[in-house]
Structures are given as structure tokens and as C-alpha cells.
Amino acid sequence: MDETTFASLYHDMWLIRAFEQGLESEFEKGNVPGMLHTGLGQEATQAALAAHLEATDAYFPDHRGHGINALAQQRHRGDGRRIMAELFGRSTGVCSGKGGSLHSADPLAGNFGDNAIEGSYMATVLGVALASKMRGESKVACAIIGDGTVGRGEFHESLNMAAIWELPVLYACVNNGYAIHTPVGKGHASADIVDLARGYGFPCEQVDGNDIDASYDLVERAVRHIRDGNGPFFVEFMTWRWQGVFTGEFRPADEVKYWREDHDPILMAADRLREMGWTDEHLDQVEREAHDTISYWIDFAKESPPPDPAKATADVYVGFEVAGS
Ligand SMILES: Cc1ncc(C[n+]2csc(CCOP(=O)(O)OP(=O)(O)O)c2C)c(N)n1
Ligand SMILES: [Mg+2]
Picture 1 (cartoon, helix red, strand yellow):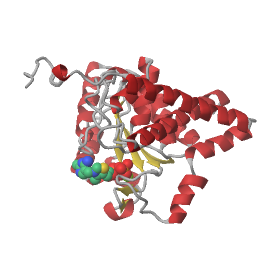
Picture 2 (picture 1 turned 45 degrees about the horizontal axis):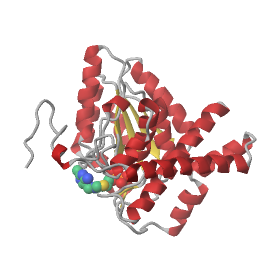
Picture 3 (picture 1 turned 90 degrees about the vertical axis):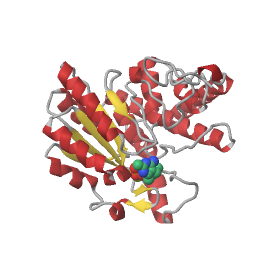
């Protein structure tokens, strides 16, 4: 990978980390409504996906997808602040503040939305993919799923149908080792999800999801395969999330140390940049700029008005309004 691309991905990863850290701090102060699951620790996986998905593609983020949503919004719609505002429940958010963390969507940025039912969009992604195929478009329909999703029936139904209809689906499985507190090997027949997916007969590959270089290259290859009309592709990103579903650490100290200090995606990328001649000062500058950008986004969100109660039912259904109470 050339230095310019690597540097740009490093910026993206820092933007995600600063976004999540800023958000987490505001959440702890009680300024962010609802629940929060951050993508801290998974920045390389998200930046690699965001780098290759166009506005005309369709991705379904999982419950840790604020980072990819912010990058897509910034890149395709020119204003990443609208994801922050959405999380703060403000009218300037992408869904006018009514979606929040788990239900924000903006198809014009390629973001077809998460919802709180893990795995449900393993079915809807097929519809988007089928429509694209029937219309002769070259859309990539991407389902970003956690390892926990694999135990749902929709996982297997989806892979099967994508295989037999040769649909343009990118399955991006984020294997961060646990579903709530259950280790992946205890919850599924294989700790390597890729081995379960291989039975459906299309390309399935595993990658170090904290290695931005390897993740970027694999997503590039997978997207090319799909756009060229070759049907689905499954990628398993091996990564780790700093934050569980609930507060408190439940994992062994040596595991925490490994992932947070020895195998952190941003620290690993910084080492690579140092090898390319970057100074600590230059690296610090990227970090500082990301935090400055996010402070500005948070200020924008806080200063934005809340949604108008009179519009509570607007945009809920297509084609008609529900009478407000
Ligand atoms: C169908 C369904 N079952 C259970 C839940 C409750 N739930 C929320 S997050 C979660 C764990 C998901 O684990 P994983 O997919 O590995 O994602 P991670 O949090 O590890 O990123 C569960 C079970 C849910 N949201 N939907
Ligand atoms: Mg998980």
C-alpha cells in the first residue's frame, strides 16, 4: 500500500476512535440518550470497509457502527456531524434525531440502517442485492454482523440464498471474540466463523481485522469480485472490542493487555508509519486533529435543537402520515 493511502486510513481510524471516545465521555455525563455500544478497538475493520463502499452501495451497520456511519456521511454527504447529532437525538441528525445509535440510516450515504434485532438484516440484505442484480447495477450489498449473529437462523438462510442466486452480497463478520460474555467457541460449532461459512461454496476468507493493510486489501478484492458479477464473498475480521455490551471488564488481564497494547490497530499502524519515516510529532498531530474535529461535531450536536414533537410521526411510514396524538 502506498503511503498516501496508508496515511488516509490512519486519519480515518483516528476519526473513529476520537468519535467513540468523545461520544462515550458525553454518554457518561448523561448527554446522550439511549444505549451505547462503541466500536473502540475495531477501527481498522471499519475504516477498511468504509474505504471501499460507495454511496451507491448499501451497507447495514451493526450496533458498533458509528465509525463507518460517520466516515460514509462525511465522504458521501459532506457532513459527518449529522451522525453525531443523530446520536444526541437532535433534529440535525440523519434521521432528525429519531433513530439514535441503533436505528440511524441514510441510504444516500449507502447506510441502510441497523436495528436492534441482531441478524435481521441478513434477510433484508438479500432484497437489496436481488434488486441490484435484476436492475443490472453493480451495487455491493454489505451486511456487517457480529460473531453472535451466526447462531441465528437468518445467517444460514442468507448465505444459502446468496449462494444459489449468486447475489452481490459482502458478508463482513466482525469476530471480536464474544457475544455479550459468551466466547465465540462456546456459542458456535467453530471459533472460526469462516469455517461455518465455507460450506456455502463461495469465497470465504479470514483476516486480522486490526491490521489495516491486510483488511483494506482483502475488502478491495472482495468488492471487486462482487462488482464483477461473481456473487457473494464472506470476510471474517478477527478483532476485539474494548467495551462489552454492559459496563465492567470480564476478560482476563493478559487478554486485555494483548489487544489494547500489543495488537491495537492504531498503535500497529503508527509503527508502520514510523517505518515510513513519520515522526511522533506528525503522528500526534493526526490524533489532535481528530479530537478537534470531534469536539466541533459534539458542539454542533449539543447546540442543535431537539426534534419538533409535531413531527414525531413524520418519515415513519412511506407515503402517508400517522396522526399525531
Ligand atoms: C435477536 C437478538 N437477540 C439478542 C439480542 C441482545 N443482544 C444485543 S448485543 C448482543 C450480543 C451480540 O454479539 P455480537 O454479535 O458478537 O456483537 P458484539 O457486541 O460482540 O460486537 C445480544 C445477544 C438482540 N439485540 N437481538
Ligand atoms: Mg462479538
